[in-house]
Image 1 (tube, rainbow, N blue to C red):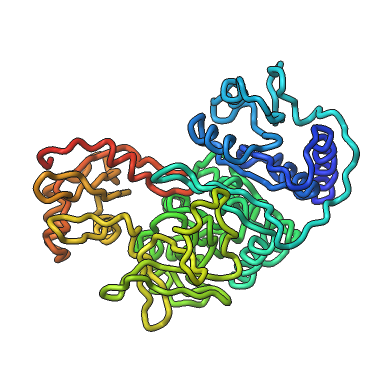
Image 2 (cartoon, rainbow, N blue to C red; image 1 turned 90 degrees about the horizontal axis):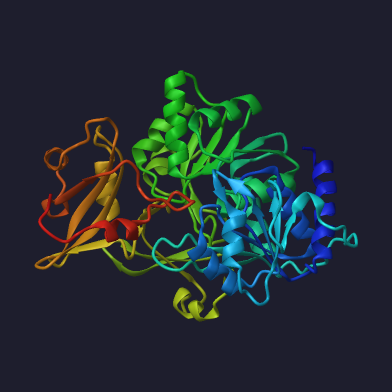
Length: 482
C-alpha cells in the first residue's frame, strides 16, 4: 500500500467514525492484529484528534472489561476472527447490558453482524473531517501495561513524548527513509505501536508486518523485503537466530534491538555472529519507552552484558542503593504524563518527578546500565536475598535449557525457596541434579540453587514477551522439593 492509498483510506475511515459521533478527545479502543487495517485506523484516529487506546489481541473478557469500564471508549475497532477466535462473539457478550454502549467497528467481517456492530468497509459516510488541530502536549495515547502482576495500568502519552521517543531511536540507529522496518511485535503493544505505526510515516519508509509469529515466515519476509531494522522481544530474536542457523546464511537486517523482557547475554553474542547484524539489549517500559540501549558502535560486551547507555537528555538515579544495586528512577522527555487512574501517580513518582521503574539496576564506570531484576523479583530464602535474574542468566547457559524462569515457592521454615521452570532445549530435559552439578561447576553460591524443577513446554508470556511469573507461582504447591 502506498502512502497516498493509506491517506485515502484513513480519510474515508475518519469520515465513517465521525458519522458515529467520534471526535477530538474521544477514546477509541483498537484491538487489531498486525494487519494493514491497523495503520488505516490509527491514521484515521490521528486525523480526528482522538486518544488511541491500543489493546493486544490476546486480551480477553477480564482485561477488556477492566479497560472498557475505566477508559470509556466512544468506539471499539476489532477483527471478526483472528487465530480462530471470534472477537465479535466476545464483545457481543461483554457489552450486553452496558448503558452507554460504544459503537463496535469490525474489520474483515464474516457474514451478518449483531446489532450495534458495523463493518469497517461499509461505514455510513460522515462529513469529511479536516485534520484536528492539537497541542503537542495533548494526550493522544492510552496504553495499558501488560499486567504481569495485577490489573493493567492505563499509561498516558502526549504527541511530544511519543515523537521524541521515536526520533531518539531514528537518530541513534541512523534509520533512514530508504530503510524498511520489520515488525512482528503487536502494533497494539508499545514497541509495535511506536516502530510499526508511528515511525514509518514519520520518515515515509516502508513497513512490513507479521501478524502470527513464525520464524521461517519472519526470515522469508525480512529477506524478500530487504528489511534493515527491527525491535522486538527475546522470543523473536531466539527464533530468527535458530532459523538462520538452519539456513546457513546471515540476515538482511542490520539492526535488531531486543528488549521488553530479559535478554540473556549469550543470546545477544550468538545473534551478533549468526545474523551478522548489530544486536543489542534495549531497556524501557510503557511509561518510559526507551531509557537506554546498546548503540551501534558500542563494544559487544556493552550490548550483550548490559542494557547499554542512556539516550539523550535523560537522567536517572538509584534509590536505596546497596552494593551498587538499587531501584532505578528515571526522568526525561519521553516520560509518560501519568496514569489514567491518578490515584496511582503518588506511588509511581518521587517528590522531584522521577519515575519509579520498580527495576533494580547498577551503573558501571562507563555509564552502562544493567537491569538486575524486578524489585519484587527477589527470593528471600532464610533471610538471604536472591536475584531471580542472576540465577536465570546462569541457567540459560546450560545446553539442555532453552528458556528458564526462576520464582519463589513458599516454605514454612525458610519463607521461600528457589524453583526453576525450564523449557528443555532437547527432548531429554535436564534433571534437578543436572542443574546442581552445572551450578557447582560455575561456582554459584549454593543458597541460590533451585530446589525444585518444573519442566514445561512453554512459559506463560505477555504480548511483549515478559514471563507471567505470577502464573507460575500460582501453579506451585508448597511441599518437598522435587
